[in-house]
Structures are given as structure tokens and as C-alpha cells.
Amino acid sequence: MPEPATEGKAEAGEVRQEADRELVRRAQQGDKEAFEVLIRKHQGRVFAVAGGILHSREDVEDIAQQAFLKAYFSIKRFDQRAAFSTWLYKITVNECWDLLRKRKVRPLMYEADLSEEQAHTYQSREAGGENARDVSQQLEAREQVEEWLDCLEEKDRTMLVLKEVQGFTVEEIAGIMGLNGNTVKVRLFRARQRVAERIRRKKRAAGV
Amino acid sequence: MSETQRMGRPECDEVLNELEELKAGKMTPGEVLAALTGASNRHALECEECAHAIDEMVMTREALWPMKETQPEAGPWFAARVMAGVRAAEKEIEEKKEGLWISVRRLAPRLVAFAALLLVLGGTWAMELRHRESASGQAEVRQTEGLFESAPSAPLNDDIVASAGEGARQ
Image 1 (cartoon, rainbow over the protein chains, first blue to last red):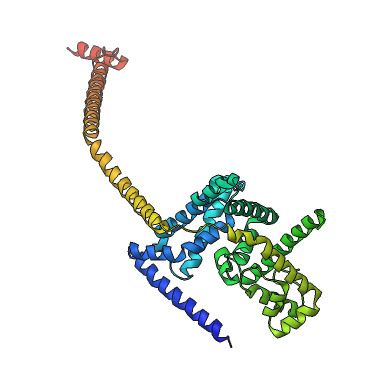
Image 2: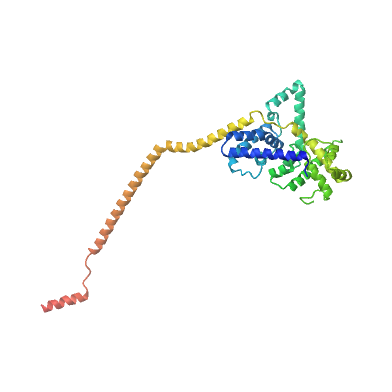
């Protein structure tokens, strides 16, 4: 029997999905306001999904916008068999992969990729501000993460980031990637092994 | 290792299944162990492979955590911008549809002139063809007539004999 907290969470999830279904129905009938509500509800996670795959903030914004546009123009064909969120995240992941495929190489994160606010802080690094140091450290840390993830295939990388950073469940990832839950678990397990091995090797090389 | 098995033993698989259920975020190995159910917790404390899997999970989460801190967030105007994009795209589609009709209308006088020219040329060609056909028909008739009007052939011997006989009777 599920614990009360889990049961409550599942119920909340069901209510959320029902609300989405209603909004989708309205959007399918051409209600733009309903679609705008859907955007506001899901924009955070769409950014999280795209942010886990792409480096640059501008790319993330562009892809998020493109994903919503694509969703808007194909919402009439969406049959609601899957949750709207799963369908939307799937579009986002595919858009990200398309962009990477077009570019072939994963671009590095540059100053130009930062938001205006972040760039401003970054530019004032010479002044030695605390925030500026934070941003530069964050950039270095992010580059380090990319190095760890470099050993993984694009699909495994996406799954690992969605699971360990963005907090998606195995079922959600399975829905987004079009895979079976068990396969997702196995691939996550192996991806973690590879990343951990890379970290260990680097630590050994550095004599830590 | 098969696609569905990770470490082989059912207890290990149970631990791994529970690990996958954990919420995202940085955790120490102790916190991970504490989050496991009784049986899995006891097993993980004794099983070297499970302890290793927990370490790997903790290590990976810690390594990937900076991603969360540098993760871009949607600005306050994002939804409005998307909707503006939607309206612009719809307008573009509408304009494309209208554009086709407008260009047809704009090109109408030229199309009419072109059609008229085609009609004149086609008519002239048809007339010419008809004229040529009738001319060649007349020539053919003339040729046939010529055949009939050619010099009569030399009289046959029988005709000569017959006319000679008639002359003798007279």
C-alpha cells in the first residue's frame, strides 16, 4: 500500500494532468489563452530539459521557444494518449538533438552565452566583485561537468542529466525517450559507472 | 549483463530500483543508505557491489550539480514572447495564402494578354495549317486529274482487227 504522502503526490499529479488535458482541449479549439497558460506551467521544465542538453543560454531560449511553437502548431494532432508534458519534453529533446546534429560539435560556453545580467557580472570580474568570481567559478564548473559527460552518448547524457540534475522520474524519462523503463534504468546505471570511472581516473591522474 | 539485469542478484536489483526512486540532488552515501527501505539498507551495508553503486551515484550527482546552478531560467516575458511568435507565424501563413491569391490577381492583366497572344498565335497557326491542308488537297486533286487526262494508250491488236473488220463490211 502506498504511503499517504506518495498517495497525495500521485493525486496531485493526476489533478495537474487533468487540468492540462482541459487546457489542451481548449487550445485544440483555438483558445490562445489556454495555450499561454500551458506555456507558463511548463516553461520551467522545458528550460531545464533544454538546459541539460545545450550549453548556451540563447540556444536554450531559442529551442524552448521553438518547442512551444511546434507544440502550438501540432496540438490539433495531439491525441492526449500521453501526458501533455511528456509530449512537450519529447519535442524539446528532439529540437535540441536536431540543433546539435546541425552543428555537429557541441559549442563551448562563452561570455556571449550568458544572460545580460550574468554577462554584466562577468565583465566586472576585473573589479574583483564576489558575484563575478562566482560566475567565473560556475562557468569553470560547468565546463568540468561537460568534460565528465563527454564520455557518454547523447541519449545517455540526456537521460543522466534529466534524472540526476532535473529530477525527472524513470517513467517520465522513458516516455520522453520512447524507451522501456527497465532499459532506462540499465542505461542510467551504466552511464553513472562511466562518469564515475572518468572522475576516478582524473583524480588518480591528479594524485588526489 | 543483459539489458534488464544490472548486477544479477535480486537483492541488488531491488537496491538499484530504490536508488532510481530517490529525489535528485546532492546526497552523502549515509543519506542514500538511510533513504533505502530496511531490507535494501541491510543488504547494501553488506554487499560490496551495492555500496559501489551508491558511491557512483553520489559521485555522479555531485559532479553534475554545477549544471543545476548554471541552468538558465525562463524570463518573465517568455510566454508573451512565444505567443507573439505564434501570432507572427500565423500571420505569415495567412499572408502566404493571401499572397498567392494577390499575385494571381496582380498578374491577371499579363495573364490575359498572354492568353490573348496565345489565342492569336494558335488561331493563326490553325488557319495556316488549314490553308496548307486545303492547298495540298487541291494539288492532289489536280495530280489525280492529270493521271486521267494523260494520252490514251496505244490501241490493242483486237481493236485494230475489229475496226478492220467493220471497214470491210462497209
